[in-house]
Each structure stands twice: as structure tokens, then as C-alpha cells.
Picture 1 (tube, rainbow, N blue to C red):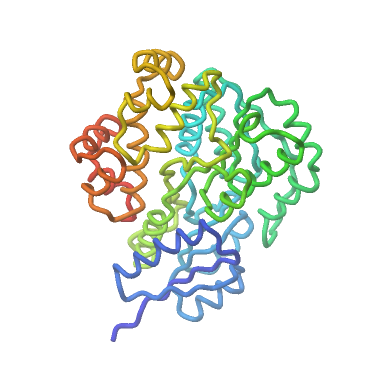
Picture 2 (cartoon, rainbow, N blue to C red):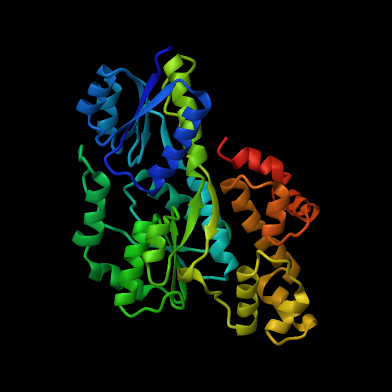
Length: 396
């Protein structure tokens, strides 16, 4: 029997993100066969050397700092970095597409008619700084300014857990009172994009303890859609979801090519694509004064999985169909029908990416009812048919 190619996954903190990546890596290994994945709970240079001596031909490793990257480059096997905070030199790495994250957050919050927007995160972490940069740039093009919480900068050496160091600096050393003062100074109502779910949860708790109403005064949007974190919050946290599984699959494919010599380490970025915003209580509000239109928007989102008619929505908010259409277009900037299609589309998009259900079934479960309706919507919104969209964004 041909000897299996050993690949290591060296990480000292398995999280929601890494679980998703591991699912994609495991699927690639099953598809290719003749490979063995070794899980290792440490990512030090000593551990990677041991794994190499044990026969590992390549590795995925938590590499957060440039100093750590320099160390691992000397080991002499192909490595792909995860949980990156700083530049990794020539080591390929897995990272979220910050531009698409920022655009998705902006469009989501602007659709809810927020005029005051802010950002809370780690300005020293590469991925967080990139999200802030793109968030600010995208909003500036739309005529909005972004209020940013500025934490004190700290020197990052070769810490075992630099993310923890940055977290302690922001949450403890900067002091909760400084954050409360920043929240008090923000114009209300305000929507805040937090760079990740753990920061969003912390922000939500601080805001509630300081007496702010969530989401009426402060709406909070996280990133990663970690269900355990999001649902433990009160109210539950809205968050941007990612296709971690596809990124893991693509990363495993790249590592395979590097092991076989088809590719070399050139600092390639394997992008994690955002898929949708999972709306929960922390953003379940529209920053407009018309309660009937707000209720209509909520009704559409809550019932997007069923075929919806404008007449039914008008009856729900006790308004004539014509008056609903006029006020909706005036305040939201599009028709009620367009909002219904968008609600169906968001559900169908997530199902295409996250499930293996046939397209016909997804059309039914997402409220489109007929596959032809779903095809028209996807062609108009994405320029692709549903099958093509799944091919591009599904795990492989």
C-alpha cells in the first residue's frame, strides 16, 4: 500500500473559524485520498520541527506575527498560516476578504437607514485594520464619516498569543470607562461594525451596562457568525457569515500543490468569502421614524422563506396597498416587491453555499416558489444562474 502523505494542522486554539477551515481541509483529503491529517495542539517552531521529523510534508499553523513567520520559514516544509495578525513574509495565509466584508456591512447598515456609523476593533491586527480601511473608504464614497474607537498601541513581540495581548490592551488597559465615554459621544442612533464577534459581544455588554438601549440607540454588527457567541448575547448578535469550508478546501489544494512542487510559497492569500448577514436582535431595527414601514420591513424579513404578496403585507400593517408602496419607496428607496425579492435571494444564497439541496428545493424553501423566479432574481442581482453561483462559492 502506498504511504499516505502526512499533513499537520497545528493550532493551540480551535475556534468556530478553524472548525470551518478544518471541515474544508478534511473534505479535500477525503476527495483526494492517500493523505493523513494530524491534529497538533501547538504551533511552535519546536512542534513543527517534530512534525517534520515525524514525516509531515506540509502544515497549516497558527502564525500571528512576522517573527513567528521567520522562524517557521526556516523549518523547510510548505506552511499555510491561519489566525494571522501581522505580515507573514512568503508564507501563504488564509484570511477573510476584507473589502467584501466592509461592503457587505455598509450595504446592510445603510439599507437599515443608519446615518451614524462607527467601528470598534483592533487597529493593530492586519485583518481588523483592513476592515476599518475598506469600511471607511466605502462609506466615504457614499458621503458618510466613520467614528473609530482608538485604543493605545502596544509593541507586539513573539508572543504565544498576540491576539490575547491586544485584547487585554483594549479591554483592560484602555479601560472600560474610556469605551463608555466614546459610546456616550457618538450621535444616536448609531450602528457600529465590530471587527469580530468577540469584540462585538464585549461592546454589547459594555453598552448595556452603561444604560444604552440595544438596538434602539446602538445597533451592533459582528463578523464571523459564531453561533455560540452570537446567541449568548442579549440581545443576540447579528453577524457576517463566511464560507470557511470553501477556504479550507482551497487552502488544502494549495498546500498539496506546494508539497508536490507545482507551486512555491509566495505569500498567497486564500480568501474567505463572506456569504450573508445573519440578522439577530442587535440590529433588528430600521433607523426611520415610520413605524408602519419598519414593521413592513420586519415582516418581509421574518417571512422571506414563504411566497409574499404586497397585499398581505399591506393588510399586516393596516394600510392600503397604494399608500404602502408610496411610503415604502419614499423612505426605503425601492419598491416593496424588490424588498421581497431581496429577502428571498438572501435565503437562497445562503442555502446554495451551505447545503447540498437541489436548486428546485431551494427555490421552494427560500420563498421563490418556482425555480424560474429564482433564476431571474439571481441573474439580475449576481449576473449568474443559481447553479453557477453555487459552483463559484460552494466548498469546491
